[in-house]
Amino acid sequence: MLDPTTFGALGVRIAATGHPHSSDKRSRRDFVRLARDWGAQRQQWAEGWVECIGEVYRLNRERLHVRGAAPAFAVADAELRDALERMAVWREAELANAEVVGIARQTLKSMATHWAGLVVFLDHPEVPMDNNTAERAQRNPVVGRKNYYGSGAEWSGKLAATMFSIFQTLLLWKLKQLSALTASHPESS
Image (cartoon, rainbow, N blue to C red; front, side, top):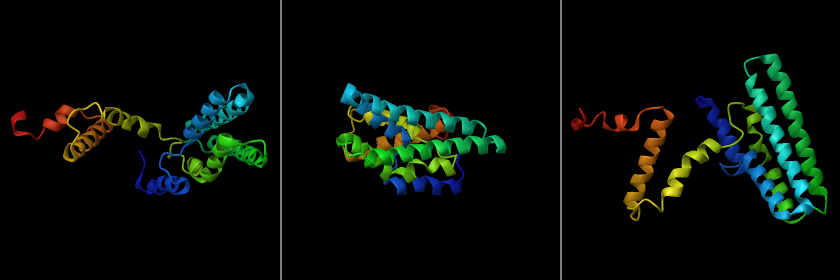
């Protein structure tokens, strides 16, 4: 659980990237898409980036695993920082290469633009590298919004949003939803 002082780090990611959903995972998805869509010509190039990002995830997992042991953490942290520095150098070299064009150049420019937010986790290990947990939590309401009848009116949309928020909070606190919702109702006793 994050303490209140960590909110500043979360805010840094949003401020640095301009988007709360910027993450290394999103950068990885961009390169996966490039590898798939470009065919053999540049597939190897894009897959190299995917492997590089995967290595950063692996190194960060190892670093977090030894978080309580200062000497081991320092070694793991240095390895992770070195890997990210190599990635930044590679990115800048590729951006200097006139042959890198189109969506590949845009992807690298996006990485450069959002870099400060992408590496917030370095100085704040409590901040996750990606926002997959938040994205998964939003999936059901997003997918269901057109399938759930009765959300055609503004009031019903607001009610649905409120209920999804309550249910997700109960889930995070590992509380039984029905019990929590009926606990203070006079007819539930």
